Structure formats: structure tokens, C-alpha cells
Image: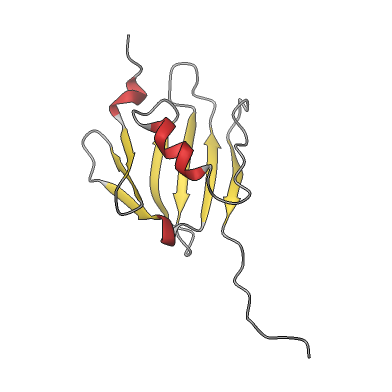
Length: 115
């Protein structure tokens, strides 16, 4: 039996963007160059509901792509996210409503020297 979460289809495109196609919703997309943070959000709806979600946010803090654990294509997306320096999966065993930071884009250096 397939999990309902498998109805969400995520992929990494040739243009290095992550796209989510969710049932009855417009496609969600974020380019890796626009990705500013990755969170895991958990809730207390499990085991009957989707209780673990991946949230991919831009530099304004807006969630551009959200998909549940067990989405079709999740492994390929996580492999791409795993290439981000310092990326670490957090919060997978939580059973309450919480958000865990897995990665944040490093602050840009101003290039100014102290000399």
C-alpha cells in the first residue's frame, strides 16, 4: 500500500531547482541559488497524518517548497540538500508541533578587511 504522502512528487531539475507537485495545488519551486534555509517541521498528527514536513525557504523567510516525508522523489532531493555545507537532518523523531533548522545559508562576507 502506498502512503498518501507519495502523491507529492518532488524532483531536482536540470536547472538545479527543487520542484514539488502536490495534488490539486500549483507547482512549488525554488532555485538552489535562492535557497536560504531548510527546516523540518513536525506535528502531532501521526501516525494517521503527514507529521514530518520539509520546508525550503527563500531569503525573505517565505516557504517556497513544502513537502512531506515519504514524498515521491524525496531521496533525490535530500541527496541534493545533503551537498549543502553543514546540512544536517534534525527533528525526525519529534512527536510534537515543532520546527528544526537543518541548514541556513552562510552570511555573506562584506569583503572588508580590518587593515
